Length: 208
Image (cartoon, rainbow, N blue to C red; front, side, top):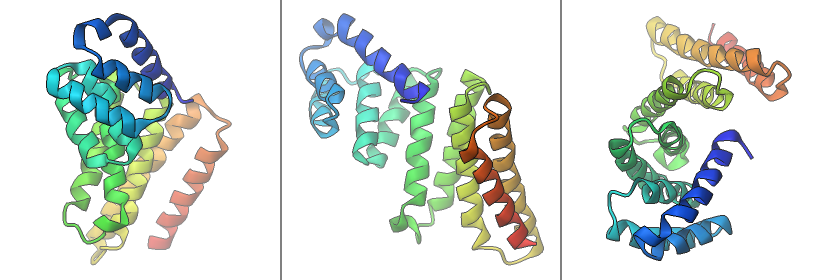
């Protein structure tokens, strides 16, 4: 279990202990469903809790996460955006909204969508904000921003028409490498990260 997910689980447990009596039973049932891995059931209960208490950041956090786990990325983005409006310092909200936006951008159904580039850029911006809040020591945030840069650069590589386009694409690939290298400073034995760097370098070489 990664650090951000562990933090969320701890939050959910603490929330379960102190807040259920304040917000009724729907959030309690949603929490119970989440802990069992029944995210569809959690969504059903948490949507009711959200209707009853629409500005409750704890409910929004659970609902956004449950939407994400169900693959309903558009609803996850919307819910985390509401949470960020209420709690702009919650780095995990930016992290999961960024992952949701990246997943939408990578979805084959979005291949002809003019908004695809916007989703990539927004994902990178979200990861950058999460890093700003939580620090560059968080390798998971750096890794995910590096992946977002990589995916965005691959997307841009198919649209190269002139030298400036190629140079811009290479710059994005280099941003990806920079983030992966920061991960290796903290975790130098990460073979997966080393492989990603080699892959990105190969992509750059193919453009030259």
